Length: 638
Image (tube, rainbow, N blue to C red; front, side):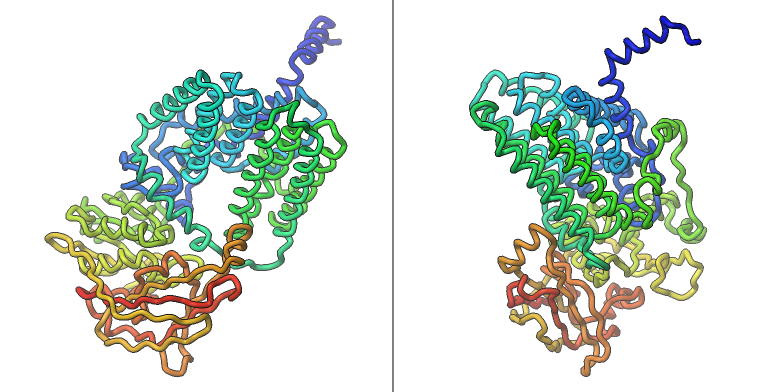
């Protein structure tokens, strides 16, 4: 028989601390699956490696390193290369405290929601840190507005969360800063004392972190805005299969809309204040919308999975802030959201559903990961031969399009361009940053480059201006094959090796040829000199319907077809990435193979096949202005 005093003490302890214990259990489930992630050598692993290398080298974010993740982005990627584990521990502890505060607050209102929260977290576990931090930030902004900024813990936590978000992922960070500035403006006109306190904490939090990292504030925002604004067109994937996930997302929005209507109809503005009446609904709506857009632009399993992972917890939080937690309608809406998301887990995650796929990982796996070293080794397929390594020595080198693991794991003197991933350098501004990297006098001494890309793009158009700069400032040396190929191929691990020419850099000089206007489906015949390098700038515009579709769903796909013979039998079609097509992009010669790019970079472009005609087609013509404006220009110093 257990000691009666011990049992009594345990019962008393449970009665006194029941809510806190339950909140601790729920908060523990918000911890990542593992303390650190295995870093691949593929696309995602490449930019994650580049991010940590930038931190290691003290690169200035915004000028020397330009990406949507900031200097604390490793907190979200869980890549511990070159960083102290303590930073991840502190970041996780901060988020843990935020979730604990939220869960405790809600469970004090209604403990019966523990089970719904628990199940919601089975979906949520493993969600990207930047998403979790932004969600917690939004909740704390609601608390502050409701409490009139009277709780200093909530004020401090809200500000620190917003500032951290800015340094982890820029797109969420810009929105967080906009919210903080909005709250600052509100306090300026309502309470000057709290305004001064709020601004003081804001500036202290910002400069405390800024002191530890290397950020050019103006360019950190300015140079990444083109990447954010062009993301939808650049990273769009065609919809494959059914639209069931989209219909489920619409149904989720309907459930949320029902909750909003209930909230607005039951609350009285005079009793709770206009700010409490109006603020929570749009704040939650923004979180729903951002998560939805992130999930349905790529429209692949990984991204749509994220949407349905976040929704159950987001719906539960919404219902509490709408003061519905004790209503039967709230339970119906909460459970409905769970069922919808579980249905989509069955369709997305190996057709087996939530529990069968072990979405819930024990919390112990997080703590065990703290003591284990992140595994990273040089795979055979990325290993350079001894001759190449000996030739390169400690010379600086960059690699195009993405394979950061090659210079990193072969211990080369890696000198990356600002946008380290070709697919992410969409648009003239981002391409120009990379072009300048190879134009300046201290440009990398070598460049490894291969002609391939992602998502059915036309490979030679990625970093088109940058490649023109390479033509003028580098010379072809040899090819490097990690597949052991003696002959040049277009295989994944075959690269051309370029060496920088001596002397000051030469920048491309373009001369205007003529402008023309065509429609979608029109074939435009081309006739340019065989030895010329002719580029074009393609300007397309959305109709009003297309703009609304782009905002609320996703943009229409535009295809670009090149005809290499008079009869149109030899043709190749690729997606037109609008920011890239705005150019300049090479148009008169076909380049899709490493051997064809050698001809370009050695001044022998005339050996490549002529593009005889081009055509643009639209997935849905009504989404676009029917006229396509094209400017043709010549690379005069080719």
